[in-house]
Length: 322
Image (cartoon, rainbow, N blue to C red; front, side, top):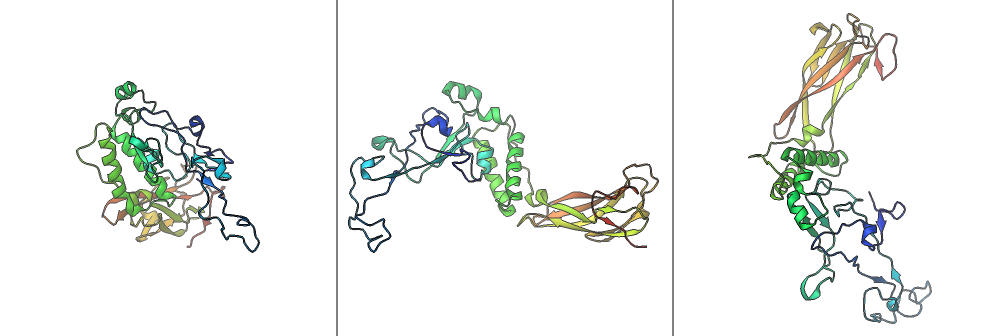
């Protein structure tokens, strides 16, 4: 994620083509950077001797112009991350604003007016895409329009949700921040021309989307015995979800006599191969109803397999009990 010289994701700010920043109408790119010098603070300042770190020339002498002037001392090189064709940085933690963009975001800006093209320190830019292809063509903007990227609101919304879930799974975003962030991105998308927005936004549960169920054991040796199976809920931090078993079914001749629901997260399963019509063995499907803190609910299913009698590989087997 960190830009590096070794893989060329960090480069000199010029030429512009090396950085990858596009030529956007009415946007000036100069590669301007703040020059950092190894100033002359007097004899012995940079030595390890008794005068090291003690300036005898302070403040250091500055020879105009300040920027990129070797007369002021050796210049520390400056590098910037490369960008994609939209002008958004490639390395780093890419937020949904960047992975599903409706604009170019920069960490730099230039002044206008009398101080034109001077650095506007600590300010960035939000440079929106044209909303339609006709507007883009008329402006000569090389960046695809919003409408060409997202033909419908559903396509935009789905990509935003996918990007947010990816960050949540990577523990770079909290589930609890999901609803507010999704609302912000939805409103932003509509404001910037994402077509066919709904009259109201559908609710979405990030805790439920990122919760998964695991069964232990998940593979049973077919010996006709009862096997207790425990179920566990796995989710990233703050994705609080509670689940309970509501139904069990099975293939290969399984009936209700072959399973028992013994608790919210536990079942007993008969490790039987049934009629033997299924060459892959019996598969039980354990269905759970999962609920988040906002009382949204969804059903999730986990499978438990009764392996072939001649097949002992593919996971942990449990021999069960009579």
